[in-house]
Length: 219
Image (cartoon, rainbow, N blue to C red):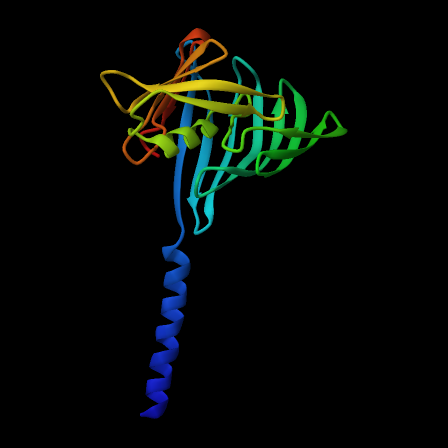
């Protein structure tokens, strides 16, 4: 009898431990189809992972136009307040192999960049809450919709770090008729982000560049 009680306690503790691990993390997976001039030219597969201490976005994909891209992986790590903490990317853009690893703390970014076999390093200071938007990738815009969803009640003046090149201010506002349509203006260019109340990025449209990115309905 005593042995049975001990076994029950052991299994109960084990179950509680496993539940605490799985209960504090979740994953959202999907695929974005990329269209240029209304022709499908590529895709991005993403995993959005929620952990006890923050979020991790992982992306891989391929695009042929308007810029040839082979993305082996792209990873962004964020705090629960959507503050960027780390970035890594490996792939080729226009046939040139690139690898970037960045550590970020309180807006101080240490970049290690490998392009065409040549390594360089730099340290830059950005706004602590800047969004990491590396060109020419689209899944990272998900961080914006995850943060605001359909709840942006007034014009927001924000910042994007086009990692590792430059930081640029941008504005974000809800559409007057559709609160789940966010209009982003950066460097004079309009980017439309459609989301839902859970913060999923459903679509991205850049009218001036004839680019449309759509969440695959089978995702």
